[in-house]
Image 1 (cartoon, rainbow, N blue to C red):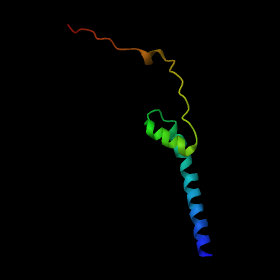
Image 2: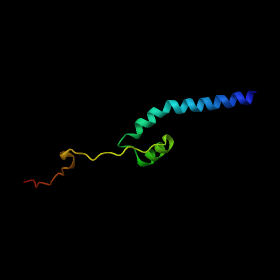
Image 3: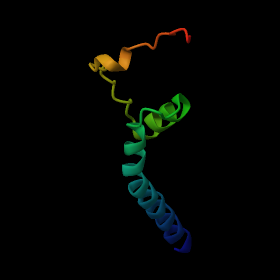
Image 4: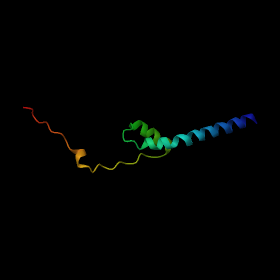
Length: 71
């Protein structure tokens, strides 16, 4: 009887831990600066892929700086 109670408690605590951490993992999966190995790890745990990012339509984001000689 005691072993059954311990097993139930263990399963309850695992489920509780997953339920509590899932929102944070989903939020972190949307971060653009999250390293690829963490994206893969979180995606595997959550059974999700990171949402594809749309290309930036801001023209200033692609602007390159030019070298102007000083003088």
